[in-house]
Image (cartoon, rainbow, N blue to C red):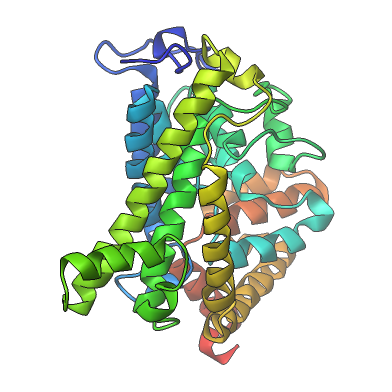
Length: 384
């Protein structure tokens, strides 16, 4: 049953370019489908989550991460009576703007773009779905509904202060009301992201040998999960034991968000989606107790995984790739493919050119960035 504060596709604020709507899909379903069929979504399969894409077949990429986020988001949205299709669309689109090499690539590109308006992956996602996807006859981008664009732009909360240039440029012609919280569906997608990466980073870190089952079994939430598995299946095969424990951790996080958010949504008194935006605080949250436990898990992952010496060594090499490519394209834009030359011709001055170069690099997969770096510098990344 749809909750009164859910986004209703029949009452959508519509698309920037008017279209005849489908007779058998809601507008939010069409948004989701357009995202799935976009070039940017396909490229996520070769983009880093934590480990560089070629390091192993079983590590998460941005694509597998996004699929896992969407699965969690659908579950939570359904339990809360929200629009599942809108929630899924946002979950699938939330990482479209990531450049190659994950946050390492983003940090490098942001530093390089500092004189030209900076770089932010959420803002870049908006740029992709409103400008850079160029497949349709009547418009650039995907022409998504206002609700989906709003959710992509501010699923992590209101966007205040100086805006990233890509976002500022778009909202100057299409107001996404950045000063408010987004819909409950957007908030669910944001929490689903937290749940997915907390869980799968534990899996990937264990697979990489960065820490052991015994070490994470000392952490809150995880401790109880391993104890329950050992009680029910003494002597279980280590891989099955790990899987059974971590799926229980997953379940604890999902159940906590649902229970906590039901109470917050009821207390908000919201009678429509606008009431959620006007509430002034997030209505989809972990409980305070679970949040405190997750902070300990995050601190452990930061120390033992994200800042592990082996990971930091690779990050330094990947950062160098981006830092080498950017000035090469700035000094000789003809190095970019022919289809980018129209954008180069329209670019206004150094700032405009830098933004074209940023768009081009941000769209690269890990694999393509490494190949381009080797082609243009004659140096393999291992030799950096």
